[in-house]
Figure 1 (cartoon, each protein chain N blue to C red):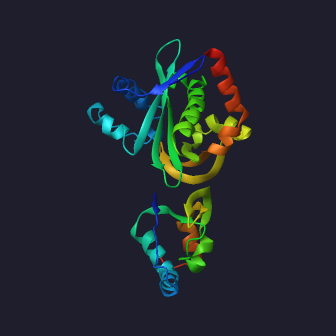
Figure 2 (cartoon, each protein chain N blue to C red):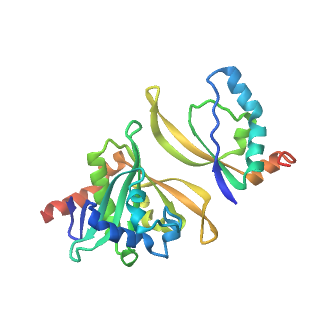
Length: 97
Length: 186
């Protein structure tokens, strides 16, 4: 089994971000169902909008790049997080069938 | 070019390519390097070698004149002020410290010539001991570990992410000692 990167963005509006959070579980289930992957990686800057909602808690931060890049006049950390197939399946039994 | 009592650190030239190819062909580590065992034929090696790469510096043994390893500067993001490096050592020189001495020269060269705040490297679990001294001393930091990130010889293998900041390198006693010894040599 391999690994994959999950790139997921929303328009910077409250409505679009809420929709992203709403559909995040279905899209993650589709990723694990459609690809033979064990680990799904997601990268974000510390002040990026939350697009995962409740799913955020399932991701585990594995790498933190301190002050990775300047955004809006200040340096922000960047993190690489991972969601494993087992962790997702345990939290959402039946979603990957 | 940076010269110490043991090494010469200089830009790569095309006549070095066969030696670099030889280093990357070493079967004991070929799977762990960027080609994951699929090293291109020598005729296609040059474009593959320079892919996403800004500069390649070789480490030459001062007495032997042989290229013992090399370092690549790649994926430079000048706007963010960060870049990545890769470090390669000839199999017969691993453990000699020559290429790690080359890494000191590399830090001096990279932070002295590029607008870089952070240098990052990926290190497979089996190679990370090379960085442990630097992490204990504080020139390098482990930014995290990507668990079971790649398959090496059929086994899931962790990838450590190492970071060297300009601030830490410039203030490090190791740098002062390195440059003191260089000054004595010249």
